[in-house]
Image: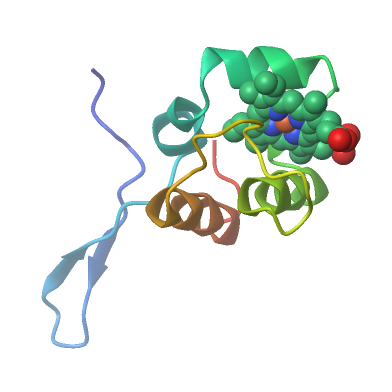
Length: 100
Ligand code: HEM
């Protein structure tokens, strides 16, 4: 365990500190993929385990669309599908600018 360095100091309008944790691919997103997800999708050139691939905005959007089923077939093929909370986490990571 290393000490996280991506927690910026924030304060609310009254100057009270607010803990804000920036999403991280390594910490929050990568563990959501199973080994079988990464292996199966690598054969399609969908490199789920590779931040440099998933962080390309078009690739991230494509992955999210298949996770949600907006673009069929819904992934992971055969399920279990990601929970709303997991999908939200992925979206928050995208909104944060795809941090590593
Ligand atoms: C979280 C897990 C997964 C994600 C995010 C994911 C993502 C994707 C994406 C983005 C595509 C579209 C690829 C393209 O446009 O070329 C796709 C297609 C596909 N994936 Fe996955 N995948 C996952 C898990 C799996 C697993 C576990 C399997 C196999 C058991 C699988 C089998 C396939 C197949 C066969 C296609 C092609 C489907 C078609 O075009 O009809 N995927 N997946």
